[in-house]
Image (cartoon, rainbow, N blue to C red; front, top):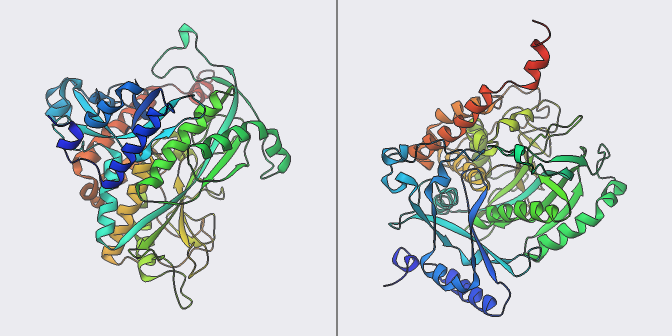
Length: 477
């Protein structure tokens, strides 16, 4: 009997060749164990580790994992009732925490230099009957890319990820630190901040930056720069653009690599948007994106003095029209909405500008140039990259299909009249609920599922008594 992969669609010719290369590298002793992972709804890596002797079985038949992993909020609580009929979602395939099948994508194989003789592969997830799971975010991005290709375009994106780097003073591994979530580590700063791009600040981190540079490049990631950002302990990594699914896969691998390498140096890397630091500065994920025509030319760039092509203007118009509905995909945590503040280098409304870092979408690069692109500054670095990028494609496609206009550029982006970005995750989810384009593109079932997961987090947050409330009222009344 043939294996699961062959019976249910198989691999592309490129993947078949990549699988042969994985076999060769494992035979040559490059990997003694294999981490097989998929990206969950939050953009977190879930999976299992098997020994190299299991490689052939896994390549043929995949690997099982509980489908309840898709029903959890960020604390790890299962918030949708897996033991109810249809797992609370009308899906008998997920009832009772039944198995899903992780199918490795051999084109993503890496050997991790910071974890000796350890291989790593991203997986796609399927029901045991072969169908792609509708909550697979990698699958949703693949569908969006397919629609874009049918419209005559290809998607290219480059990542600009800000993050914080701390020295761990207490990992919080005592018995009373356990919880859902557990106590975060106690940390100290590694830089004082407030000297943006100062070479001496960079030198303070040169040792760990060297380890990060070496590790990121050793696993084939196109690191373009690694630098000190403005805030205390704040850093930024930028990566050269990649096309299609590889652009999101890159972010998954980069975040994992940065966190794992930092951990081995007694540091904690956090992609949380705004950690609770005195004088702390929020981190963003600026998503640089462009469209290619099917011949590989830049389809966004204008000609004859025009800043953008007609397609570029329509695509940009779609990003602005659906900015509020897309917000929960670009900024999926409660914490992310601490960032949208006027005059802060973060956007607060849906406007665009020419080389203006206060606008939500910055048009960067020279008209007619191959590198001209749209930089959307709405995202947080904790976002699920597949959902963030797919939401951009879906928004832009609607702009292309309807010929939407982005309106004039905003020279004063914090004063230009325009729809305000959501001020909270709850407001972002309400905007998504009202956005018919996302319901159609992602499926009503996925949108409902996403809102249930995120509203479970909101419910826990709203049930807590915050430090602010206690300080404000406890002594007063």
